[in-house]
Image 1 (cartoon, rainbow, N blue to C red):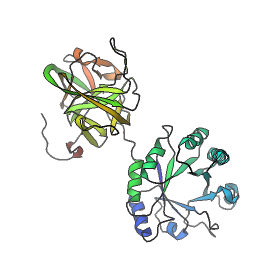
Image 2: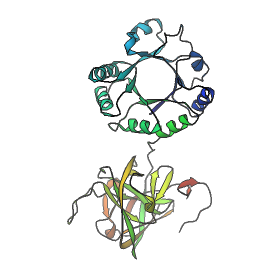
Image 3: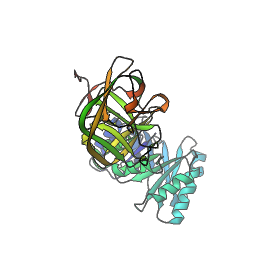
Image 4: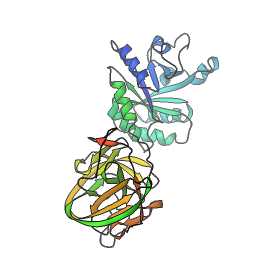
Length: 367
């Protein structure tokens, strides 16, 4: 669960509107050094009091979490003795090896660790995450903007448990929430039955080269129509005349759809370096991967027709070559040129039509 803490300490004239947006966007927490900001918030948000230059408030009514500056010398245990229902964490600014070691110690022991890394490199965060692995506390990393939040969430593949970002204008909250939701939901795959395989002449096919190493049962969902796609295998499996390309999927013809994320499709023709596509394995588990390069070349094409248990027809057009593969039940690797009617392949059936890639509930006939 990616935590989003919104820091309103620097918000001035837009403070009220920003707090309203935080409630609307269901932020996980609001951080303030003004107790009145927190007392008026609904219990759906965690109310965090954090100040670097003010004394502790006289009472903690309306406050759920107190963050102490590690430089103050006040220990969480000192506060918890008098306020056992309060959650307490500590803030560390990491500027050198000594403060990095202090951050590692706190991340291993405290319920909450709020970390501010002085330098742009993410290596110190990697060290803290490794040091605190398999501990019960939560690490919240301060970020400058949503773009940095997305990077922080991906460090060591696990990422920080949460981020804290200062909001100074309306819209900052929404952008942060969007960055936190870059992880996409898994998909429910179905077994499709092949009904026909035929040559369809020459055309342009697309190889999608990503910046990631595909697993053996992983690939991209590709289809001629938005309502049905086939799981095309990556080139992680040995071939007799060429080395493996574990970053590549020989995906399909230029017109084909693929999933950019769970809610939007892209044409293969639209993919470019730096874009994102959805990698899917034979169990339907997903992850976003970055496109490194797209290769479009003219080749003989093969059309594969299949049908879902629901009766939904599915079509896939790929390069007509033995080394182009799709995945079957259990992650079975199937050469497309050897498919025959009755064979089973894995696929996905989006439930809605698409308009410029977005799901839309309207009449749309594809054939």
